[in-house]
Length: 117
Image 1 (cartoon, one colour):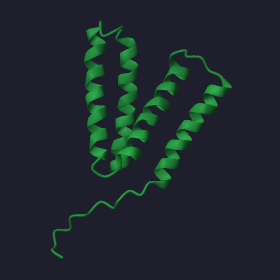
Image 2: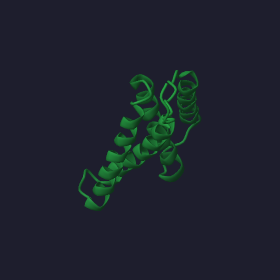
Image 3: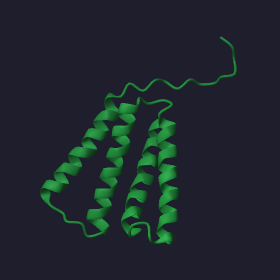
């Protein structure tokens, strides 16, 4: 469940990062309010992951997902420049995130079975 929370938090991070760009220096209140809501949700989900995952892994994945998603949206929807080097670096970034997931030593979550041991 921690990894799911981390992915959700990363998706919300993309939203607030884009919101910052569209808020024109926090002058467009109709953009600022959803941006702040997304920021709070993003950090709330991230904080929930820290109950299970080590902060070093969780933060690297959290910020990496945000960077990956923001770059992807920027290149595909917002007209940011696209180059082979940029694409390769973004692919390398997501590869590193996947690698962190594969090598993480996530502790098993205890199941509450209701019985005593």
